[in-house]
Length: 158
Image 1 (cartoon, rainbow, N blue to C red):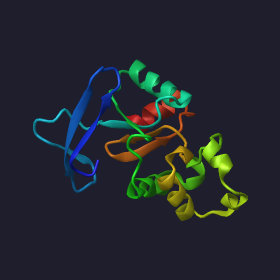
Image 2 (cartoon, rainbow, N blue to C red):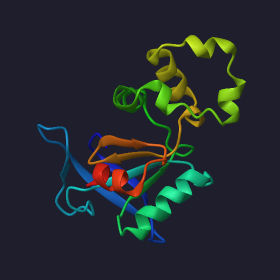
Image 3 (cartoon, helix red, strand yellow):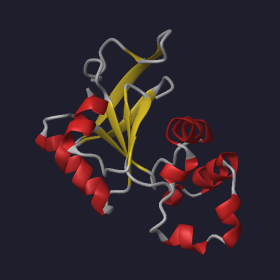
Image 4 (cartoon, one colour):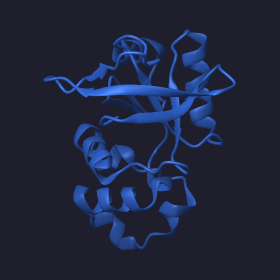
């Protein structure tokens, strides 16, 4: 969400929507663009793949809590290196590793000694290495994975 237009699907709606973002304010938060469908200051983006069980669980929980969110499929729109760097800065590379996936298992044993920068390179090159979902609130990384209790999720999402 670095300016421009994001096209995605708001979960719970059948048709794709266009979300206009007028840029970022001094605090880095997205600014609403006139005429856009960006709703309020609690915009949630959920990154992952639609077939992932944890992503399905997260999206169902957000729907149950009536929290509108936009889903971004890693396969259709891989994260940029800048975005990956922001996620690694917030969560650390260890927390972001999808250790149960085939991409992770295919890496050599040297992965055990990689720095966060090396992991960021790998995450940007192959998003299947990233634990899912990644949830951003107002353009800021908030949650990686979905193993928090309901109170912690509510606290992080506001």
